[in-house]
Length: 401
Image (cartoon, rainbow, N blue to C red; front, side, top):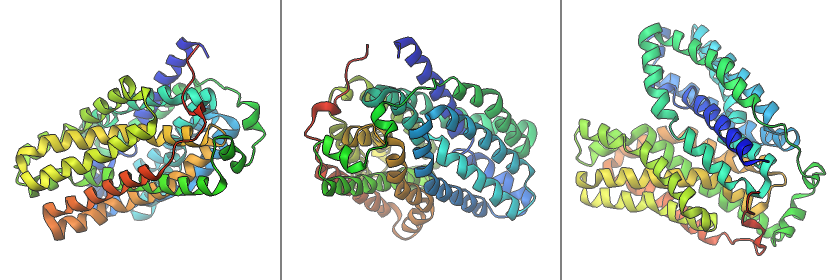
């Protein structure tokens, strides 16, 4: 694929991903409270419906990935734009708990087939082993989803109410997201992908026995679940956590705002420097960033809050890329989408449970809850140390032509 066409594809996918994340994953933070007031339910009920959507997305992921392996990303992501529009329209029309839950479950279908994992699989379908830089590119763009989405949802809600905001997001998926996803090249899978060889054959080609392949799959699934649990816990509880560490509310909010830019900075570091090393090395480095920052905050308190936020954000940014690149270099492009969906099932389930579970730790332990998230980060680091790079050198991307 020509470099100009590749850049256009990355830009289109990145913009579509920004819209997808802003209007789903980041939506409850702004609209849950007015939604709950209008429907006569509690805010936790809205978040519980959102958690159900995450469970649906976890269960659907492997099937969506297999569809992308067979058909490419274009038709699947185009269909997802329509599903997002229907789900958001359902939210706008919701009149009670039942219709609210139904709308979120439909959005869960879209999330399971239209967020990062699907975009990563679409790029691998097009570029094979050379997709690492393209994966980094879309995460750089979509890393601003909360930066764009939260203020825009807030403005829409102020102008038209929460129902009007949902209608507006639905319209954006049809007017903007659908054409952007339609811009993805159709692509053709290499012959080896279309013939669907057995996973064990692919593993042997990369120097792995079936036992090693299963072991690597289990280790990666644990790493992704542990790191997504922590990422979601921090997204839900960071201001309160920082206050438990001695920071004032204004300071906690200001420090929390550093996480987004730090994530983008981490992805820039991956794109600029770490892309020259094996993704396992960058993932190990990233897995340690949260535990180091958490240790500093737990011991030294508020003066290290900003450093903790930067380390956590940068590590999370690099790990987001690792979720796409590690399965590619360890298992190859064949069956990538299906394998990616399987690997992310535990992560999505951990993500759904994370706000509630970590909230309980925070209630009981205060700032000591950081030792839980730090422990998960250290465990993820040790799991990554146990993952061996393939003996083949084919895992290194070939130069673009």
